[in-house]
Image 1 (cartoon, helix red, strand yellow):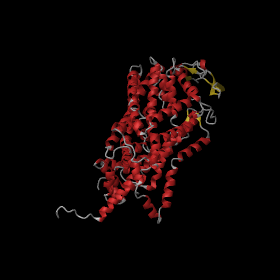
Image 2 (cartoon, helix red, strand yellow):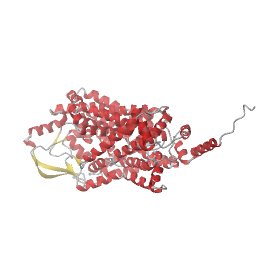
Image 3 (cartoon, helix red, strand yellow):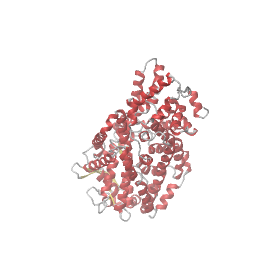
Image 4 (cartoon, helix red, strand yellow):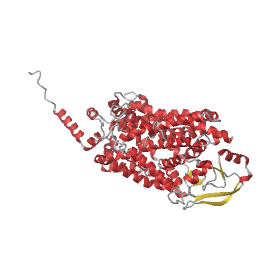
Length: 631
């Protein structure tokens, strides 16, 4: 009987269990425990691939390759991917999965920097106010692709000008021969509010000409004004297409990740199918081999230029999407013991592999266009909207059954945009629901309300000055905050919270500590890359441009204000946190960098294990030794 008698429980043990029970029942923890989880692993992987694979992969990477040494550009690209992109990706998904919270609420491990989470969420929310116009353009091209005759293949339409030529071959011929038949007036083309074309003569030029595709883009799709000062009215066709885009987004995310996680089975895989189809067809075209040779031909002399490495770093950074909050938010819906390291490696290389594969597709088409125009391939390469909405539509119009290929290409652009918008909207909505868990019951209404607000604010970029506004915002908006946030994120995790403590957290999830490679990159290499890129970006700053249009001086002032808006929460929260703390300045600083009660694993059992491990603030010496594997 004595042997079976239980020993009296220690008072400290009872107190510890009581505190754990109180923590589990607290509003913050109980709200997090009710968050949805991915139904299947494939839902998460496809959502992450869809978020990372965006238009940046298709219309910027090929241009950078052509400008920075062709195949040689892949060397700095892969170096930056391994030393900067992958570590940042793994860091963010590990943070999100461990805490099980949105990007705005994970910063309990360093309360002083909670403003970073607000900045991420604010940046995502404000981006949704202007960037979906690209979805509107894609929808408009999709509709026009169903025309009996593609409207960007002829010059006899109401929007065309006297300087219109049907193909790039005719345009380059005129430029090379200085054809006297086109000598004459330089004409500014503008669309009046009643939809009529207005021509204003301002001078003469012997080589001025525009392709039918260029004029369709400028004077039909955009109906662009003379400049930023001439805003003009809202273009009905773009407003309706933007509404259509937002309605599709709302229907796909109406139930959050439960509905979006199923939609991505189509939207995330469809672009790959369409890219393969386009590649096979374009390889059959004359000149495609020359385009491929230009793409893979390496100019290793370019590797000595710092600009090449900077652009490789920025391309990796912008295409993977760290510091926007989307990676953290998507990972926060994972199971606590999910192998996020394996997922990070998979998604990272799939995403950037898509950039390389997309380059093959782009350069085969561009090689065909260069062959037709009898000009070097480098003369045809462009980036940004010019590639997606001018070069490609013209090239596809040269194929048999051009309506089919144009429809396929427009559908691919829509799929790429939808996946990005899904994750960005979820980043904002999750921040709201984590702050106010009771609002989850009204998710449909709140999501609908957000989509409506984003639509009406986005109408400003459907005006005739919309492209000037879009370019101005896009030029400045993420200029400061992304690189700054990524740098501070690494510093907070590796040096303030401590690389050793973060390794303990990862071990709780994965059952093993992160490899030494990640410790070194988090502590030294990645922050150095971010700081270097930030400094060189500032040093090489230039005012925004759109084609040959020069923005007025006040535009730069507006741009810098836009650039500072997402950064302001970081400063405000730092000051507020220090002000509310008690004691001397040193004591306040120590309090503000000590993890608070909100920082713990999202999983109940993981939370118990976490709280039972004694944790002390690591010194700089301990962090240094841990970062190089000596502790």
